Length: 223
Image 1: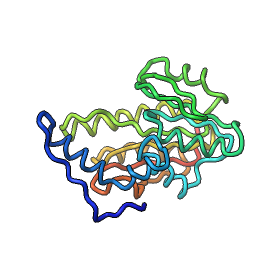
Image 2: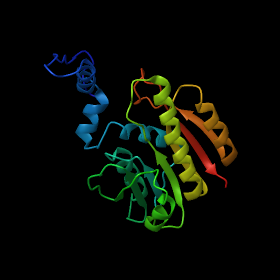
Image 3: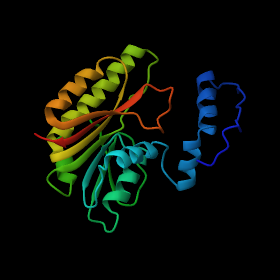
Image 4: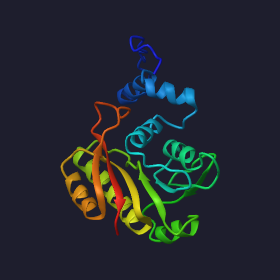
């Protein structure tokens, strides 16, 4: 990161703007990962998180089929596509979100609710292979400000992503999902340990240090 950390941008409060919005804007303007993402043409700073996970665990390989849940605006899909299509277009990245995703090279997108009762069949109909090699989930709900409620909602999304992964993943596959510290994430880990050879908690450096955000990583899926 080349940005001088001593150069801080201060954002003045504006009429009609909430204090939380002012703080968010100030944080974005002073975030070196946001600046680097813009410089490199990444859809979001989140691209660095999955890049770091891959550098440590080598999850992506050329020719793989990757399912990215909650993909908008496309930062994770963008990185995945670079790896699975490194020397050809032999891989596939299927990006799914309830919001539209602008076109990305090497990425097929579906505007779809992950709670859709027909989602498994829809995904199978759109995958190039019978099963996916990797399932990614960076999904997070809109926050309510109530900590317990927000934690239950993120756990619900992660459990749903795992439900999908257990139907879609190829033997030996990989799962990466977002979670927040709050107590009940231990239940998720216990569930994953039954289905994956190795399970890890991961906190990428690009994940803000003051955030309770974590990622759970499951390696070598065994159905």
